[in-house]
Length: 92
Length: 94
Image (tube, rainbow over all chains, first blue to last red; front, side):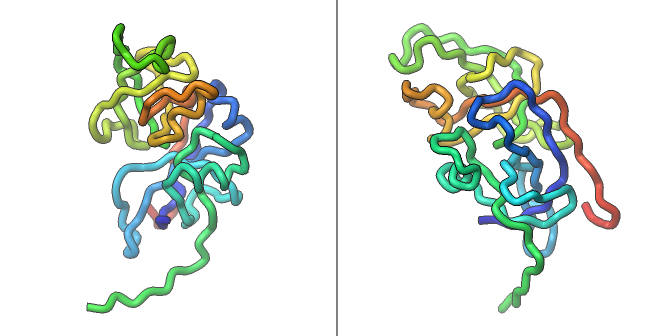
C-alpha cells in the first residue's frame, strides 16, 4: 500500500457497468516527507475521502475489487483508508 | 487506473482468437495537469472511446474483466470516458 494525497475528482458518465456508482478520485502518491512521487493515480474511493486528505492507497487489482465490493470489477487502485497520522523514525 | 488521451487506433487482423471483435486503442497517459506522463501504450476498448477523447484505463489482469466471459490476453483496457476532471489546490498544500 502507499500513502498519497487526494488532489482531484473525475466525472465519467460512460464507463464499465461494474463501476457504476463508484466515486473516482485523483490521488498523488507521496514520499514520507510529503513530496509527490510518481504519476497521479485514479482510484476508487471506498471510505468517503475528500480533496486534500491524506489517504491509504492500494494499487493491486484483487484488493481494489474487494474494496469496491464487486467481483471481477475492472479496477486496479482503491482508497482504503484516511490517514490520521504517520509516525516514523528514519534510522540511518 | 490512470487518465489518458486516445491518440490512435491499432488494427491487427491476425490476433489471438479471444481478441476478435475488440478494438485496440493507442493511449498517451496524462498527468492530472493534462501533460503527457509516460510512454504510449495499446489498450482494449470496452466503452466505445474514440481518438481525441480523454479516458481512464486499468492495468493488469483486471483489463480482461469487462469482456467477461471472454478472457482476452490483455494488460490494459479503457474502462471509462472522462467527461471532466477537477484538480483542486488546498491552502498550504500541494
